[in-house]
Length: 280
View 1 (cartoon, rainbow, N blue to C red):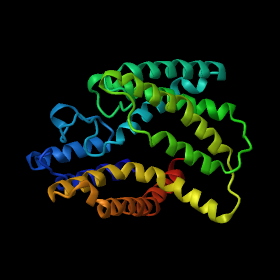
View 2 (cartoon, rainbow, N blue to C red):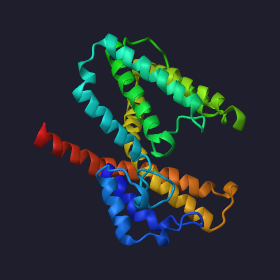
View 3 (cartoon, one colour):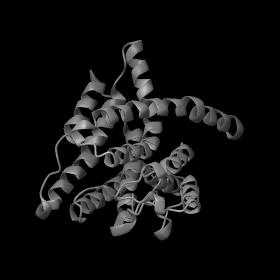
View 4 (spheres, rainbow, N blue to C red):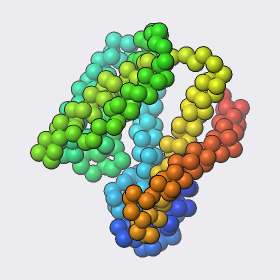
């Protein structure tokens, strides 16, 4: 899916031009080279960052998280998997504390780090994955199922509740928002994962819905950004007011879901099956 995301970003790049992004100024050869870097998860630098926003993966922004996950997987193979549960818990608490400190001290007052290497973005991204990855591993070791009725709905309600509030604090109190985001990441989201893992579907329809949402979650994540940029550029070029973009937004949402499903069924799953037969 990294390949699909990179190719989609490259193919749609010239359709994303606005007054802020002069895509016509980017030579085709440079775009092709940037696409190649994205394909192999090599971060862009300087003149290769074709979008000009400082992104390490300018053609498909979310790829940054996979870059850091690859680092985490390498560290897992080399060291993390060998840690006892006690030492793993200590690592989680240490990186969680460092992440909290980063959230309240960085100049933006949030945890939106990792997509750029500027302003200590690399270290912020590394902290994010070095808390989340070991925390997930720790949860898998100590998990004991709770009896929670309607776990899916409670988890959904919790996610909506913590994401609906606007940014907290003003320019003089950036740390307030940092505290809020850190508490969500360090406490709320692990609890949501625990409750969600404790839930059980009780009928065939619920099972199919949950399986569908789980199956397309990764494909949607890796393809949505190029489509968002294209939709945004279309609205800007045609001077469509925000309040009148509902048709475009609906087309974007359902288009992402449809394309994600097609990628899953006709590319991702067949390739995974082939790789498993060949290498596993």
